[in-house]
Length: 258
Figure 1: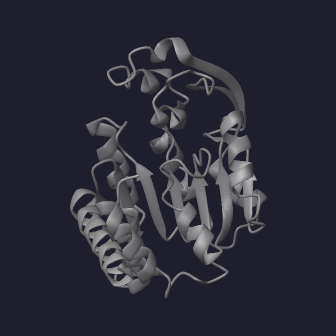
Figure 2: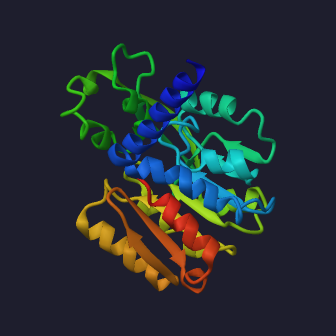
Figure 3: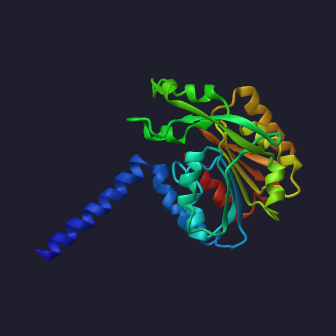
């Protein structure tokens, strides 16, 4: 009887793994990539900068890697209710610095739009929506018809990317993640001002029109990056690092949908 039960459990496990690999191949490969990355990204000096960190969990591509490898870095989130959740997420990670601000072209104050966290029956993904452009939230009206009545706004402090890097005296940036709901280009335009250039850049392009997408790609290529465009995100890898195995693996991992 015990033997039959064991065989039955093993069969269920094997079927579940098989079904997962077929139905969600990207998520299944995610586990494989984390395992492969473990040999390369356990350096305590690996540094990440994330613009638009949200709560640190929702569709977040780097939290599993920070948790596993103990990376250090600076995570930026301007929306206060998201930032409070982000503080809880990273409470046990002393190597991670959190900044409650937005990254813009100037030291200033701007209006940020987000979905009210107390909205009843809102889609789970709506919690991740926030932007300096209200119209980018309204683009989701088809899936969330009542979204316009649940948008709230707040004034947020802003700083430049250069000031952020200088403030925290970053000596290296191995990975820059930008998810700014339509403000990505304005942030990426500041990369050339940095004394320390990111080795790998992951940014969201789905809110860019074709012209801005092209400008962003050409700008990064001029700065010495090779471009790998995915469905919603683009990965830019410093050209001289392209043959380097560890960065190839992280490029492969971060190309998964988030």
